[in-house]
Length: 393
Image 1 (cartoon, rainbow, N blue to C red):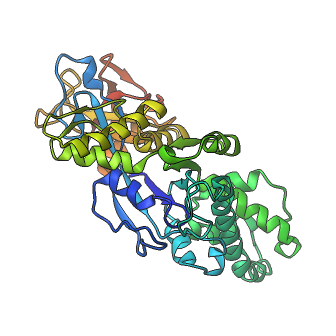
Image 2: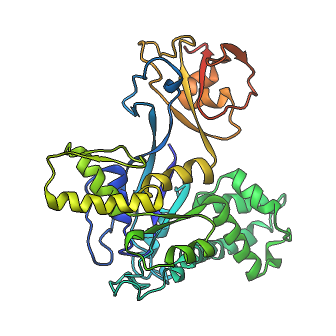
């Protein structure tokens, strides 16, 4: 399962985003370091279910009339403040918890209502653009400090016969969540000496920065967009590659309203309807949320998750079935399972995602949409329905 981390300074709205996205109860407070231990839960990326191409909807609990929700892990860690790599705030704990993240949603207080330490100030008093770079900088310094601490060991290894600088760096950097493929890609893009004693401090910092960029892609969640002063969102968009205007409070209100049967809304919908049973005060609050959706095309919570999964991490959704005609599993359930896979994945990759035994016993696959056999090296596309034929079936 993909793992996505919520990062940012304290009081930017990470815990509210987490609650809205997972409907798990966590502490939400208007003071720094409300979150101490990481909250981990399941959220979902939204896509169109293949059942829309059939005469009936599927049997999955994660499908709402053709809106398919595919699970991802989401976790909200302690707020980060400048100097975290030196242990300020809960910095070391925060950075260690980011090790396993596939991507990071950087939650920024777009309203400018909290200073760089996460302490409340008047809305508009702080410039949110100033918050953009420090998380990447702190992570770069954190990785650089790990490199520096372990460099003496690399130098000692270099005195042994058969020393390979790539192997030594790979062994060291897997500790920050990098795969061998990540490390190989980063090393291919920089020029460096084979002798570790000839590495400069600048080169080590460059290695750390490139590795962070490769292993921890980041998008900006411009939270509190509904109360942000005019121009803040535009300036954030000018300063960052991907910025999603968001109202986590608005999404949470809709999710709780839907849970109570007062609102007809599914995460990511471009609108909602309100029951006649709501109070005037509730209706007024929900209409404010409607304004947010009309202004930004949604509350931003689902859009942020979808963007990081399908665009930034470049994944697709594939659906394994046992009956290629009815698109059902062995129990007759239509499209019960969905798997997120990197773009470029093959039927064999899907087989291993279903179960290692299915992958090891792989024989061939059938494209259920076109009812034709496909090769082991066939590249899957978003929404593919695939029958895996395996000795383990």
